[in-house]
Length: 272
Image 1: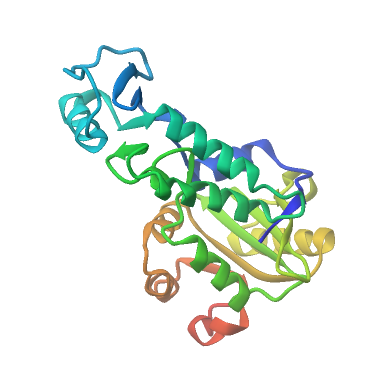
Image 2: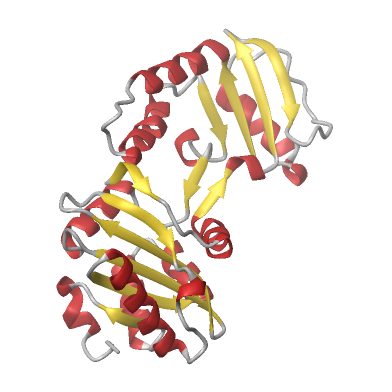
C-alpha cells in the first residue's frame, strides 16, 4: 500500500511532529530492561536508563518466566522487558533483511518484519505483550494492518487524495495528506503547508481551504475528515471504528469536507 519510493516533500515540522505523537509509539522512548542470553547463558541484563535492576537471574531457562518476573520486580521503573536469545535474534534480522525487494510496498516489508517475530516465541520474548506489539515503532490506530488495507480498498477511490486533520481548539494542530495512485499505493505522504493556506477563519473555512490546497497540489480529494484532538485520540483507540465514527458524527464531532461513497448514508447531512 505504501509505495517503495513515496514523495515526502513540503512537510511542516510541527504538523509532522504532532502526527508522530498521535499515531506512533516508540519502544526507544520507553523504560525497558533488556536481557541477552545464548542458549540460556546470561550475556547481558541492563536497564535502558542504566537504573539498578532488582533481579536474581543467573541463567535463562524459561525466557517468559524471566521476563515476567523482572517486570513485576521492577514495576516502578520499567514499561516492558525484552529477553533475546542472541542467535535467534540474529537469525530473525537476517531473515527479514533477506526478504526485502526494491519494488515492494514499504509497509508490506515492515509488516512482515514484525510478523516474523512470531516464529521465535522462545528467542524474542517481551512482557507484557507479544514482541510484535511491543518492539520498534507501533501504530496507535486501534485496528489491524489488514483492516486498514481493506478499508482503503473499499472507501478510497484510486488516484485520489485523502486529508485527515486534527484541531486543537480552533487551530489546525496536524494535517496528514496521502495520495493514492491507480493501484491504491500511497505515492505521496505529507502534511499541510501552512505557509500556502490562509487559516484562522473558523473550522469549516479552514477545512475547506486545506482541501482546496490539497486538491490544487495533489489532485482530487475523495476523503477529508477533521476532528478535535481528544476525539481523534478516542477514535484511534476504539477498535470498533464504525461505532466510534457513528457516535462522533451523531454529536457533531466530525467535520466532513469530503465523504467516501460507501458511508454517505451514515454521514448524510453532515457534509459542509
